[in-house]
Length: 233
Image (cartoon, rainbow, N blue to C red; front, top):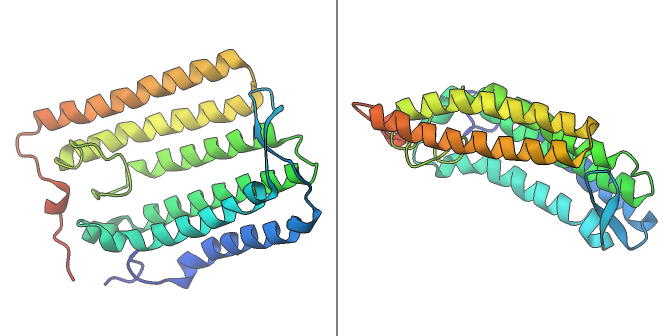
């Protein structure tokens, strides 16, 4: 097992993520006695509260989901039939894990702020954070190697390394565009812009799926994901 492999424990890689998970749990526990019900939980396109929930929903669910997500992303490479490929994408996979946990931390921070009556900026903070995550994902998408859990997994990208590589290069650009649109949504909080961006994003994602099929169809010698590098016990 290589040093730096996602299958090997590394405090350098895990410490930032563990610190964020602990911060989410601790902040929620500290805020618990100061939060009254009902708690604002959802905001519309204009940043106005249009959904309420219990204290448990606001302060308990996200920490539990974050802990579960951290553990899942940490150990899921061990279950992947193409797990040997994770060694060549250790950096990108670590960046994906960190960006997911960081997004959870931002969302929970916004929920806590809203629960304590400081939620005026929640309507733009969350779409901005999601947009940043999409840009990060798009930037590293082309560096992901074939696997069964991380990336754009269609029947054709999993059946052809050529389709995987080409689709992820295109998907990276699409994700970065969607991230930029989400960040603009945080500024241009208008229904027409949000609807237009969502429609354009849906069309772009649909084209990525079709493109993965077209590349696979033209591949004269398709090699499936598990055929790139045999897993070693």
